[in-house]
Length: 143
Image (cartoon, rainbow, N blue to C red; front, top):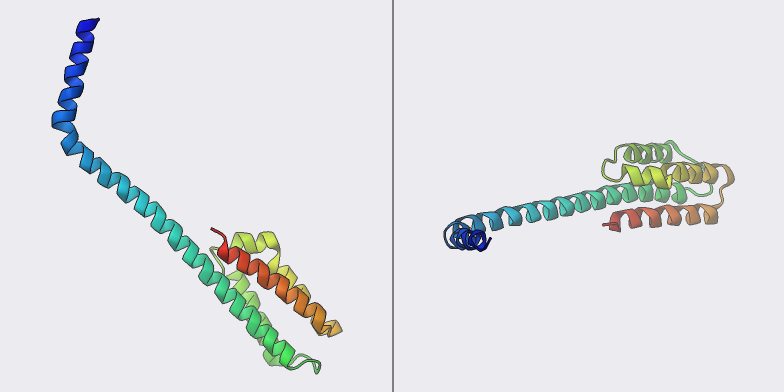
């Protein structure tokens, strides 16, 4: 049994002395590349999420400004075009689609615009807009 440990000791010593200097740096480079790749992917995903949220916020804000600028006269075709643009933006999101669906942001936005067009309640529209805006910002800041 002690002879086994002697051979084991020699094998480990030779491995450390002759093989590890070659394999060690290579293994270190591979591990470093893997960690960098996963970190870069996460950073890329976060940047895309933020960009999509920014585009969605921009479309919603532009539409809301158009709607509120004509308050209380009513919708013009320009405002309806802005509303359709927001629906397009909702449907073209890739990186945040799951969260947008989970939070029912498109339904909330559609309901807020419909309610505003029917009742012309600015305070209620502002509240709904801020709620939607806050949820989009939380989605953007999620890591």
